[in-house]
Length: 418
Image (tube, rainbow, N blue to C red; front, top):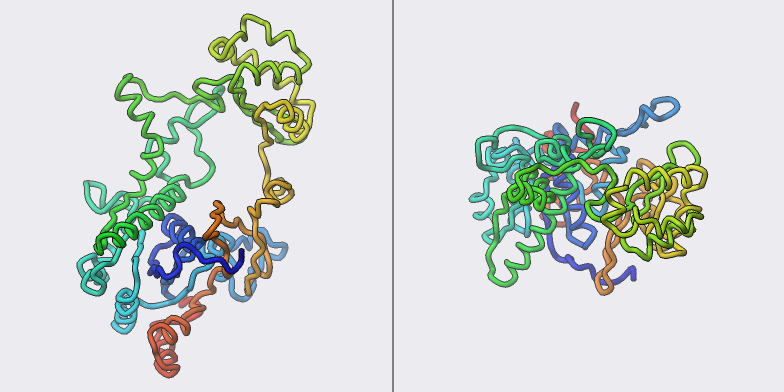
């Protein structure tokens, strides 16, 4: 449905955010049709622009405009407009004030108070647009003893107690999840908060200030474990790949280098089917594995039996054999597996985007499917300052001469001022 109406058409968001958490929030909103105007400065651009992967190129040459070629940046800023404005210049500040006055939402993820120190605190933003929705998402919030500290998503799962629950059963110590877990979690929460605030404004006419501490956002995803410690007095323990109730449940080695399959048995019927596929139907009648509790108590033995069988087989063969019998199982996929998987292809998980500075490449598309207002990728991520003329000219009514002078004066630009 390429011409279907998008859910957030008509919503304009001025986006000061950088790196991952804030841009992830506005990426989700852009997917639903919001008009995102991403603000950068030619002197202080989004640091993700410089993660260009040039070290992996045969000659190490990132091309003439490396700041437009970052895979990180170009995945997070699809369907957004990109402008450069120097907020420390009076002319730049005046431009941003004009945009605020015609925007619905302002979002930033700077250190607490940083935007206010540039003259864009909540009270000033309300003067410019009385019903504005403002999302401020510093890592540690805008109040409290830690408000002035800087932190990134890379540390949030540690400080938030999440890392203490991650790890392998046969190794001591916590294990990082592999991504900066706090960023996408906070970004998703911020997008949800924006939707809630816009819905409230539709009903009441009132704007909102949303103080979203990224750390607290991360802690919220383990709320039941925190409550469990309060009630039981013991911290949650590392479970490896095991489930607190169901068994067998885990990731099992397969033929090939670092190939694995996950299997999750959640009923007696699935257990019996697994035994049949393993070629060991007698296990289903063994008292050691008679019910879920017994299987959980003898999980080590079961893991050894299952791993001996999977180790000689391809993970996809294991998946098909088990799924045909109703047993949940799937390979642990590589990036190439995702590209090749027919289910992902049928669902349109990856979309082809043709970026002017990189050429065509596949990117993760829309993670949800809505029947009446389906989201979609509308254009590639912006090159630095790519939409200056559109925003300053078409939206604010500036003349070509005025826009040219802004560039000459260093207020705007399309290349970094190193």
